[in-house]
Length: 320
Image 1 (cartoon, helix red, strand yellow):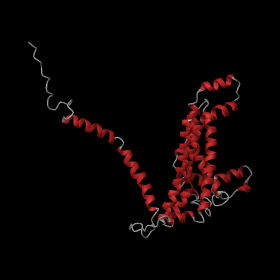
Image 2 (cartoon, rainbow, N blue to C red; image 1 turned 90 degrees about the vertical axis):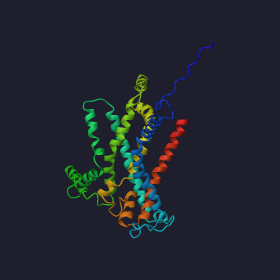
Image 3 (tube, one colour; image 1 turned 45 degrees about the vertical axis):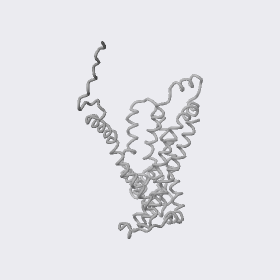
Image 4 (tube, one colour; image 1 turned 180 degrees about the vertical axis):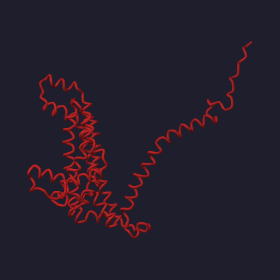
């Protein structure tokens, strides 16, 4: 006789191990909700405050929007006329040159001084962390506060800069720096350099902290001088971080608006009118919203192209 076989126990109704049970489906639904609900606020923020404004600006750049038809939504389609009007404007080339001059000069001083300070604070000495924290004040303060501070310092009536010149015996150089077309751009560059130095110092200091000490020890054993270690070890190893800092600094400086607008408003005689200020003037002074949107897209394209070239070059170097 063969032994009787025992039938497998039938799963109870509602057993969570059953794939089709309500509890199993609810557990899967909660897991899916958790995966999508966690990034949902960030995605909503990006869509509302970044993606939608960019798309709407792109749409508006093809419309002849002005103060009359903007709110009514009856702005006619004009194709590329807004872009042609902006690019053919007699002030566009001058504005672009001023923007590039402001960006390149500010970025060069920010990076060089920030690198020097990063090397200085990479050493251990008393109160190094306190001094490093004090240098972050210019970066932590709102840009409007920094701009107001520097506008007061460069004032021709009661500015600190003129007082210092008189103290050191150079009173003949005193004048109102922000109303002179020959010195206004230099004044706003000084203010922007002071604001941007801490950013470069932080990035480069973090990079210096990650460099292997064994390489420097081997170089010292071989008799390499401090300058030789800097040029042959520090700079080559820091090159990726330096390029990243320069790219981020370029994007940040190229779109600077608040410092220039508070200090000079783009004047005098357009000496400090950079592209962001020009976009503001087109949109909110002359109410040419279509041309302002076209100028804003041009302002967006230049850093975007630079970023694409940088990322392509980095990928090619990593592949090599």
